[in-house]
Length: 376
Length: 58
Image: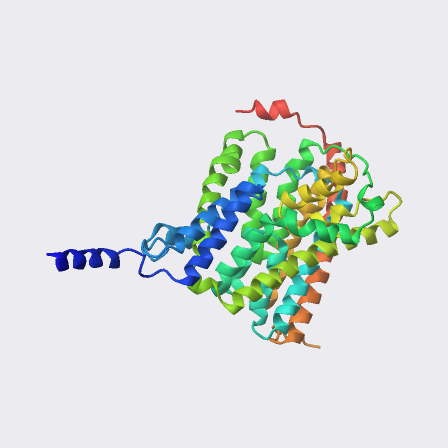
């Protein structure tokens, strides 16, 4: 009787995940917990980190097969893998974004390209490690574009097997930008530079805002077909917003659809953080190179703005250069907060939004050129 | 002279060439877009679109 009882308990135990849990799983559960902590306690991008952290924890508890073929998280990831989710995210981003700050001051757009030197530093360093092909190095470099959907899109074309690591690195660093960027920004600027108050920009008319998405969609489809799906959807969303006539569609894209896609995306990204795939030497390298790309991009953006100041009569606050890294609107907010610490009356956010929005195009252009050159 | 299309070699040199071309072209294309945006204020000469009129168009 007793032996039967123990035997049944043993059979029951075998069907739980208790016997399968590894040290790696425990480490990844702690990592997931850390992401949740950062979202809750530090308020670092809770919309992204809560879903990623929760999904990372659950995916590392063996037994449920949520991430195995047939599991719910598996299908969430299939949406990412099949490059359906990233263009839909861009549709929502377009419907949420006012490109006015970029249209009103196009001279700052160049910072959206300057702040992407980090991508290229990471590419060369990745190749120098001897661990990655040029295609893999390109996918790693695009982490420095600080644009999650674009990173996923480019990685799926160049090195799909690295998608989990690259997606996690891109989204985690984007969420951690308030920690990563300020030290670099302060290191490269003086107190006087950080205190520069910029002149108000001109208001942008409705007709300009309506024409803008059509012009950009034509340019991108013409010059950068590899990334046209993303930018076209971005511009579609923006057109829906700016025409004012289809408010219901614009609101759906910006709110309900965006929220649903964000839940799917964060769950999908977190579900790829399984210990056996994630705790590898290459993952550590990718995480490190991603950080270098972010730091390099921030630095090159600030330096780019300082170089511009050499030629400008009316100086710009070099902090806006760091926003050129993309990650809308996180990077612009970081520039604003750093400037606010020097001068509580300096509201840099709208000025930083210009380069920040240009950064989205900068990442798309870099990714498009990379795809065109490597995938040829 | 015939131009033969080549791919980026899978070497360190290839990574450097890719980075230089990509960075340079990114700056050129972004600058090109900014030039187009510089002429956007001319669109206002076509007339003014009223937000209220657009919203009432349903």
